[in-house]
Length: 201
Image (tube, rainbow, N blue to C red; front, side, top):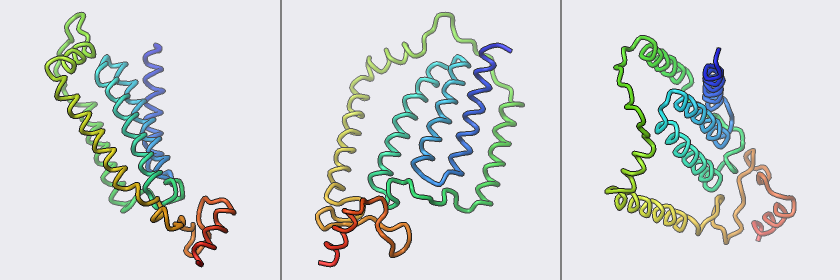
């Protein structure tokens, strides 16, 4: 067994295990990072298959996407930091059935499908070719899209910054308790006491 085969089996196992953990962990933030790990392992497999562009794109896209998702969960979720225990799967029987059918169908395509043989021309560098394309005639389009997305993200933060994650920031808002009517979650004792006094006033 060659080093490529060993690397493939290791990353395949990581991808499957991390993908399974996405659905059984009790935190949306942890689920985001497990999904990131799964996608990174798939990216390594893409590189082993000489799909350089797909592998590199998967690294960059998933790393940024999962980090942004985790950050937004920490900032805006009522569940403090998205780390408190919560149910990650709804309609479990339906979800399991759909997952099994989808896995079987995709596996059948991968094992029994007849794929065309289209060898890559000798010396072709797909990532370099893509860079020339993006930085050539399409440069203005991609730069405009990047500036638009940045402006959208700044606007979203500005529109939500007048309130904290648990209510208006200037009114002594308090995070919800882990149990109904319980003490606020994830707050030092001093902050809890101050919050109680402010609440009574």
